[in-house]
Length: 308
Ligand code: NAP
Image 1 (cartoon, rainbow, N blue to C red):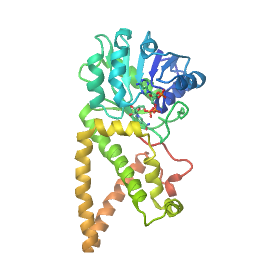
Image 2: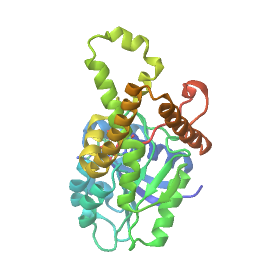
Image 3: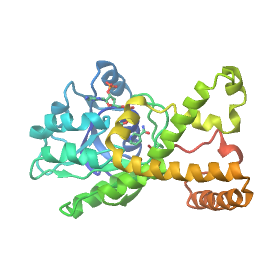
């Protein structure tokens, strides 16, 4: 493939940014990749593994960049945007990879100068690992990357960003900001909270010893523990910034849980059977859409990455 952006600046050099860098390099989509992260340690790893140049400040890193990717925790986006704003090249595109869009747009958009294009984005791919060594070139392969352009977004710049993301393997879709935040609350944020809770419950169950939890975990609990091992900073920010949508979904979840709880108490097997038949159909739909494997035990060993 040919170069889509001559110079790309990655601000934040963790799982998502390092995976983007590996994939862009593998496909030859950027002539030069510049990076910045908070710590000297991360910058040194990035210099060694996937950046052509790293800078001590974000302001320096974005100078002359055609594409700037904000890949820091959601809570840090606003301050970074304020810092880089005066240094952005006219005509540059700024995008981000934050898992929540409303809060990021609110924090970043006011700082974007006229003549610079801000196109918010969210790769629905991740693992429970973080940091500059955790990235790999195939993370986005066949995963969705949602963009939330506004009515004023330049169509040619949107198409150019889309071609970069498709070039690194992603499937791209666009939607509005509020809809995005509701969709991810259902498919990602609430399930993560439920996994955190389930692992917390097991932790508090003094009647079940630690060794039994580990020994018998393959019966389902293991998958919760993997999700509940996700980065605490990232997930704290997700819940604090997608509060309304997550609370809406958790309210619905609690209602459903009470209905199932009542069915169990009343011995209403028909209700449980009908409910589980419906949920099984959803699982089939996910497999048919290529979003997971039908292999027994979730195809462990060749497991596809998760979304964040
Ligand atoms: P990560 O691996 O923890 O990396 C975060 C990076 O941001 C690190 O390089 C860190 O630098 C840097 N950073 C943090 N605060 C900073 C600041 N104030 N100034 C400059 N750099 C700063 O995180 P990640 O998983 O790549 O996530 C990054 C973004 O992607 C988040 O907004 C998250 O919502 C989104 N996202 C994550 C996933 C996922 O599953 N992981 C999926 C989709 C979207 P140091 O290493 O020096 O601390």
